[in-house]
Image (cartoon, rainbow, N blue to C red; front, side):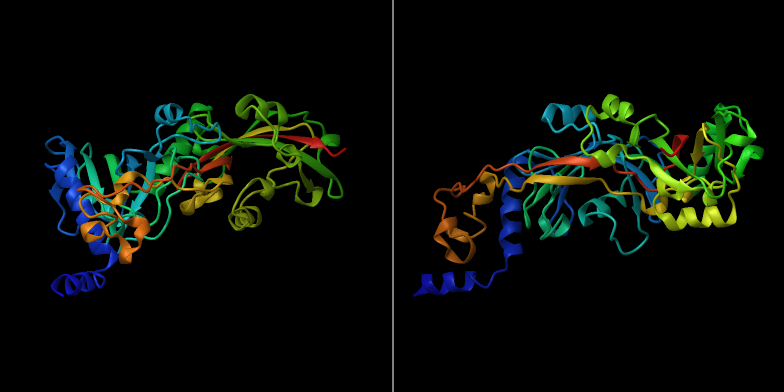
Amino acid sequence: MFLLAGCAQETTIGYEVYEQKALDEWVAKYAPNAIPMGNGGYYEVQVESQDGAEKVTGDKWLVLSYIIKDLEGNIVYTRSEAMARQQATFTKYTHYVPDYAYLMPEKNNTMIQGQYLNLLEMSVGEVRKLYLPSKLGYGSSVLSNSVGYGGQYSLAANKPLIVDSLRVIEIINDAEQRDYDKVDSVALAWGMTPADTVVNHYYIKKLYSINHKDSIIGKDSTARIYYTGRFLDGFVFDTNIDSIRRRVYGEIREESDTAAIIFKGADAKNIPAAIFEPASRVDSLRENYLNYTLSYGDTIRMVVSSFYAYGIGGRTGYSVETSSSVYIPPYLGGYGYGGYGYGGYGYGYDSYYYGSGYYGGYYDYQNTSSSVLLRTEVQPYTPLIYDFVVMKRK
């Protein structure tokens, strides 16, 4: 009778309690020097910051590097090109650079909570390793590899995780001004000055022009635009020029990838809005600022601040999922708790989760999630360079 009453009481204990107990046991065995955060998570300081290093505060943009793993050490997320190549998850569409994240001053909704709480205690140059229950991680969401930065496995819902090598690389006090300064520096390298701007932090350099009155695009005419978009480090994130797509990406997936942008002569005094997103920003530019005459045969290069491109929101990477599955490693059988249930009973005594022995049973299934990245991520406050050629419509 006593045993039955005890078992009945266990069924009222929530899933988070089972998960937390399993994580506590795992940390005690595999990371005994980890420091409790006081809310279920743990951390280790891998590299101390130098004396006088700038401390992180809220309401700042941060440049960060980190790796996300499951408790088996499988890589779920990385922004390292070298690691992606090692994992065989590298794609030519992915721009492997550190993360650029906003740290909110009060209520966090821009990153996982465990990462947020640790960053508020860190300084530039410091590196930490975090061990987090799902309530401080991705909760009931699945962390997949569908945006180009995924490892070989996805992280299943409601599972603990490791944030490894979390480093604060830089603190940005004024992200907008940083964006403007980068644009002005590029223009200066092109031999231009702020006096050459179409509007503040928007520069156009004509590389080639026929310079004949008959080449000017008339009001009732149409033209084709072929373009290449690059980040300031030279990475090509978009182009509709077939030879460049083959050279950069090694393929042309669809006919639309190399379709010209068609615009009417009524808009010929304006850089075509179809190149940019969101269109509303470009509409504002077209209506209020830009008065730049285009001619057939023009080859034009421009560098623009993020205000005239993807702005504070940036653009997420996009991919097509070719298979959908999740690897659940053996540790979820329960380190000491058999599927997060006392005595190896798992969730609600389902025999599927029954485990024997101290570490519980194995119930792993090794399916992988794969995807094909089709659109490159553009981070917030990212200035862009565009080259484009204006041609007559066939």
